[in-house]
Figure 1 (cartoon, rainbow, N blue to C red):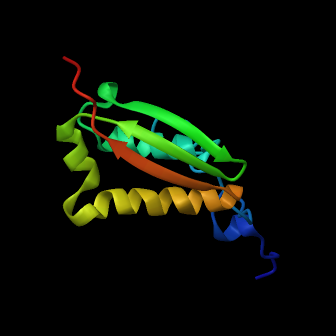
Figure 2: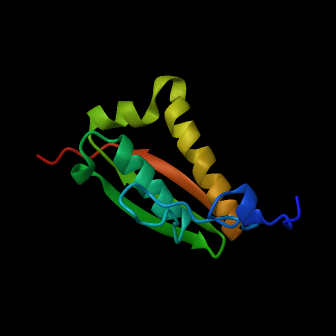
Length: 117
């Protein structure tokens, strides 16, 4: 008991640091997004069965409000909306929470592709 307590004694060799730490993905990359629109695109691509067929269009209404328009296949549209709209509602909640950190508002629109004949 003669030793003075220090964070390294309690947490092993790692010293305890206050504040937010950047979490790393399994691939070793840091999990930080530069904008809420990047987060929205990432979430939608992960949930889609065919991420290559997605088309994103970002429209800025003014300095604090943006709209992301997503055009996807009808099969993916049902998957992204989810049962009673719960999936797209959850995505919108996550993106709105992230955009509040930047002081912005972001809307997500899902569209069906126009059939070209």
